[in-house]
Image (tube, rainbow, N blue to C red):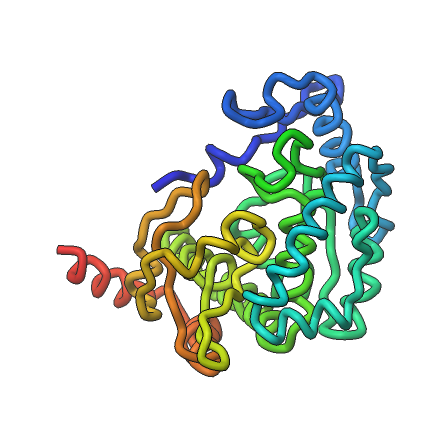
Length: 299
């Protein structure tokens, strides 16, 4: 399996306080010095942030604002056709600006009255236990940078477009705000790091890349699909399998390309019962049994 920590751009800072975001060689912005400096600048703001204080304001450039507008414009008609109803209702309730990148505080201000969730800035990838554990307190760690302008409809890592357009709208829904929260509760129950990875894979194949039959049509509910201009057009043609916790929790995936295999629920009730039930009740002992089931099935 591709480890997310290896592929998402790691962030370091030296004794002089200099912050560096390390982009991979094939990253769209790898050879763009201005973009790299901008990533370092935005990451430094997040690292300097203290809980309880306003999220540092990023003054987005005209180019960054245009990337946001392009993605919003291209995704809007696709959402109407391919997203689940709860997601569309959340878009109406949140009414996030399409003309420019919203601040994380603005997103938080609109989310809190609906589901109590709020955002905190992240410089880059957040450790699994911290990221998922914070969800129990209705806190979502989000990057603030914008993907490279040369490829506005694709990002190899989760930028603010993914974090807000994808997760932000899910966090405004009754079903998926609760699934996020239950993931946090589950994280606190798990002591074994491999079992936490199992949980993260279930989250990946559902909250990030889940699909469901709604009103007789296959619709997307995963944040990764709903924030990806390209992937949202492709998910119906991928291989679809029924929800299977043991299989999802032990399956490999590659974050650098469209997901070729998706797990399909036959209704939102099935998502709530199977996925929500797992997050609500899983323990190290119950996941150990699922590991064994997954190993037997793969043999």
